[in-house]
Structure formats: C-alpha cells, structure tokens
Length: 311
Ligand SMILES: C[S@@+](CC[C@H](N)C(=O)[O-])C[C@H]1O[C@@H](n2cnc3c(N)ncnc32)[C@H](O)[C@@H]1O
Image (tube, rainbow, N blue to C red; front, side, top):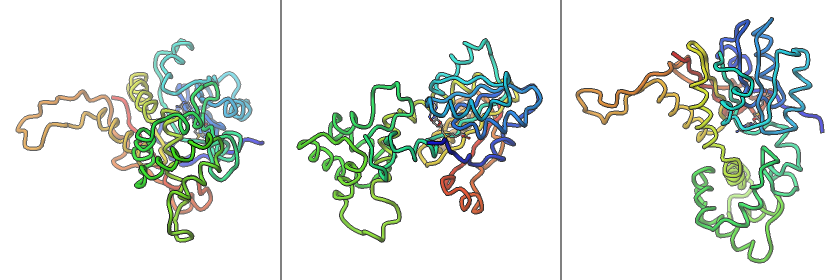
C-alpha cells in the first residue's frame, strides 16, 4: 500500500517554527515527511533536520520523500520522548526548532493490518512501534474491568465507560477478542440507542482510548515537551499540532508552565510560586484549521497548533 498522509496546518507550522538557513530542526513525528519537506525548503540552503518516528513504514516513506535534501537529513526510529538521546548520538547539543504533529497518520489508519480502525477487519493491534510487545489485544483481554473503564473514561472521555468495560469482560469470558470489528460490534451492542441519529460511530471514543493507552501517548508527550524545551537554543521554537482535547490540554498546561504563569491561590498578596520562565508563547491563541482546509483534508478537522519560543 502506497504511503499517503496530507499534513495539517502546514504553512502555519512552518511559520511558527521561524525556519532559517543554517538552523537545526527536529521533526519528532516525521510520518511521510510532509512537514519535514517544507522545514528543509524553508531552511535552505543548509538547514539540517532530524526526523524521528516510531513507525518503520513512516520512516521508509520519509526517506523517499526527503531524498532530494541528501545529507541535510538524518532519520531515526524511536520515540519522540527519547529525542535527547537521539541528539546525543548525533553529537548535537541544541536545536533551533522542534515540531510534533501528534497522533496517527492516514497511512496507519487506512492500513488494515495495523489494527487501528474499527472500520477495517484486522487483528486488534494499534502499536505505532511494532517492536513493542504490548498491543490492543493484550489490553482488551488481560486488563481488569476497572482499568478498562478508567482508560475509556480518561482517554476516550467516554460517558458510558463502565458499561463498555463490562461488555468487554463478558465477551472475553467465552473467547478472546482478537479483531477490530469484533470489538466494535461488542461496543455497539453495549450501547443501545440512537442508531442513525448518532453523530459519530459508537466505538470512536473507545478506539481512541485504547490507542492512547497502548502507545502511552500522554506520558510520552509530557516527556517530549519537557525534554525538548531543554534542547532548544535561546530563540528556538517548539510547535505542537494536536487533534483532541486531551493532547491539547496537556500541551497548553506544559506551555503555560514554561511561561512561568503564576499558580499561587487567588487572593495571595505576593507571588510565592516564583516559577522559572523558560519560554514565551508565539501567539496568544492556538491556530486552528480553516473551513477550507477541513473541506480539502477532513482528517485535519479539530487540529490545533500551539507554539512557544525559548527565552
Ligand atoms: C500525524 S502523523 C505525522 C505526519 C507528518 N507530519 C507528515 O507530514 O507526514 C504522526 C506520526 O507520528 C508518529 N508518532 C506518534 N507518536 C509518536 C511517538 N511518541 N514517537 C515517535 N513517533 C510517534 C506516528 O507513527 C505517525 O507517523
């Protein structure tokens, strides 16, 4: 299957990074190389890019796409949370910009064998990095109902988390749940009701929750934001594109933390938290996709870009 992914908020990401000739950039989610290609163009003739992805297929696609830039690119397979170690291996101390374009690529969603989508019959899997042992089958078949309900609630913001967790546990008593569509059917049966009036498929939230848990997405994002900030030169920029409210809330909170926003209780006459100011926001509000972009690229719907500049 040919790799396809249409990058979201492309111009906005490049302008937020303030790319310049000679700059060193990390694309921590290089995917098919769409954003990376534009970073390299905008930092011509000698900007350098380190492209990281957990997914081997993405790295192959990126290598092909970025071939024209030759020695200006290094690609590394790994988790963006480990970007500090990846830079160390390349003998680079600091960089001018970091981009994270979170979540899954269209290729991962559309490729049935990766087991991310409830719309495609496949083994339940959902690993971004196929070297990882833990996958969605293990989660769904081994975790206790209380833990299943917790992740459905916390990561899927699923109001009927307990009901779905109970249905999963009941179904797996008869036989292990192994396929995407089997799980989707269990969820649909557990949520009687509104049929055609439903705005989204009933398994949407649960599948998002499982994917986040399998890949430990929020912990990795938190680590990447904090590690990345310490890798930026003064004046360097950190830009993050998120696709759901959990990610965006975390990015907003950590970026506020970098900006040293006071967290003293209201009414305190003098600030006592004295937080270190590491960065300032590039803009007051996040950039969002326009109606024209979502019409042309429906998967960019809900994307938000936040950026900060290292002081
Ligand atoms: C939305 S796509 C990025 C697309 C890319 N910006 C482009 O223009 O083609 C997200 C990519 O990030 C990767 N990814 C997600 N979480 C990751 C992590 N913690 N570490 C490394 N790669 C990750 C996924 O494998 C996927 O290829």
